[in-house]
Length: 364
Picture 1 (cartoon, helix red, strand yellow):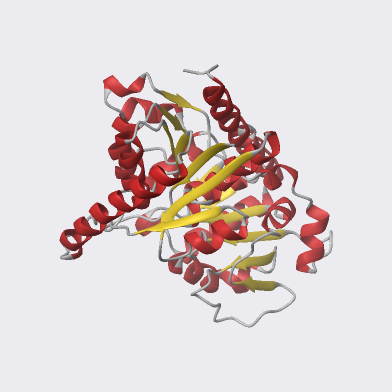
Picture 2 (tube, rainbow, N blue to C red):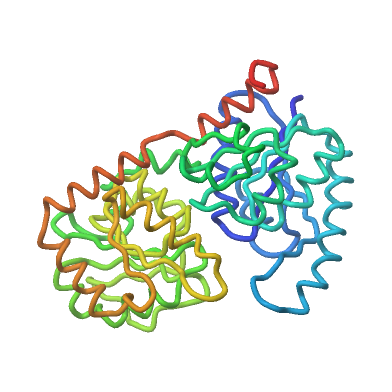
């Protein structure tokens, strides 16, 4: 049986897109699908819940600040390489697909050392460190945005192609009626959906809490707070908070009139697949490489989103944008159309077809 291995993890944004591709492969043929990820954290639970074999390895990462852990993690990275090499030698995959994140570097290096072909995907507008490190090991690199290719070394640009971000198939078929049924909200009410990613976002949560008395005059607010950040506001008919929305999220997104949230790759592309106008509050400042800012700016240039960055992210400015979009149905419609245009490509399906063709020898 053909075996295809996946790697990536650390956050949902590095796992769910890979799972979207895995599901497409499962629908197209009989494959053994295996995932190599972080032996700690969320990776194992999410992957095994999707019915895929999981192998954990030690991991480490390079922080963007001075830390003793940068030194100690070098040993974890080395250990991860040898553990990944042992796993790959045992399962003998026909191809390794990397969805990025710090955990992906040792398996990609190990695969290359064993002569196993590596395909990679970069979700963000600007390539991350893991993608840069994995690039020499990769035969093919997919990017979400055309401009991303220009950031790569020229000798590697010919192996790259812009194809969008993989999104789970359910987001293309979200049912607004099912979303409203899950939320207990009638068709007469407009919904503002707040998303901070799989881990939540304290800044976004606090801004929403500050504005809530005014927002609920126009919208029912559905708030994904993050598992570790419960809302400090009691639930009402106009405010519904959830630590995390899982299987129902495609339907909830379909029911939403406006989305407010961070601009991690997963959040914005899932919202785009549903064709939703967005107000984006990207993670910015020290401790981040600025990937969310450039992601958000791309969606702003495309006409799909309004932005609040850094000091501009105040309760007053957020409420002003929400009120403006609440009143201007034409603008909301234009933003929704721009969003849908970005999200209309079936990236996971295309990548799955490329993997199959490569294994068959039809793609080089």
